[in-house]
Image (cartoon, rainbow, N blue to C red):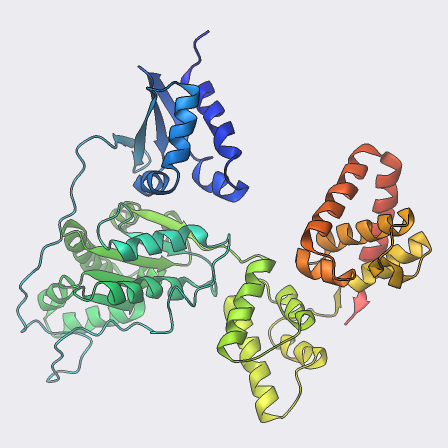
Length: 468
């Protein structure tokens, strides 16, 4: 029986899945769709050229192995790339080339960023030098847009993701990321003219250009830029003249193979009162979202902020901060600054009491929490053993079971990392915690009585919170 393209690709994915972690598999392989199989050539469809380039750069050997194993030594893989969610182009087809040309620009073109009469040899990029990739903490919540940004920085204007639009809620690092791209380009491509501007600033410049009858000069200036970075494009809403001028600038830059990087608090499809032709162009490249950081990423962000401030906090305090500050990176930074101020100006030692006082300035509900200690007390009581035994070096079956259950509950009902949980039980390593989680889960899946006992303890955990 001859296998069709769907079955062949499914079997290829089984090979891939065994060789890479779950998150990269979900990111780079689950969106792929098999299209056809002809003459030992499997065609797959990828969302955009960025996917194709990433697969070719990072997973080509793995893909070759899978294809040859499932199709044969002569098996080959071809890509089909989606364009505008409707049209499809093959990688082998004739694609429009992006050409970078050195342009001779008259020095008489006014620069809207400088005071008249003051000359500058080079355009100021208006970038914050502290916003770099080194200072940007990566996690699963932002790995995709960061990867795109790094690729752009290596080859500005020469990738398929032009424009790049980074979107996400307030305080997730959009401005940091788009400026990090600009700073990296400035560092590695000194000949490039990079410019960062907020939408508000751009709009004010448009208004000034209209008043002074210098719109053409304004547009000519922006067309000199090699990498244009505009922040908060959602503020283009209800500004038809600004949209019209930006539309023309966008077209000129894009046709010249120059890089455009934008940020927004929402994806292009959700932008209100922005012209359809602009939204269509925003979809030409890559739209990438910054998601809310998970607990582990928040800990990494906090550690980076503490390192910058030369501040050392205990694991307990760091966990407390990252348990209560969940949605906004700026608030984590605000907590650190407040702690530094309290410590240096008021000469207060940074203990959990001070941290709770500071946290209350940022979040309204910090009255109760589920803690590892609370879980240990309840589990120890249930098994009629002392809390100390949960961290002791003993192989007594009852104690081991109580410890494993405590670890299971700590992982599922607190935001603590595996390392922190292990440390709470006599300094056990993360592999011991993982084994405990699996043991308890297996028991719950196979033993109904045990599962009922666990659910009873869970109810007690939820109703006997520790007052903070």
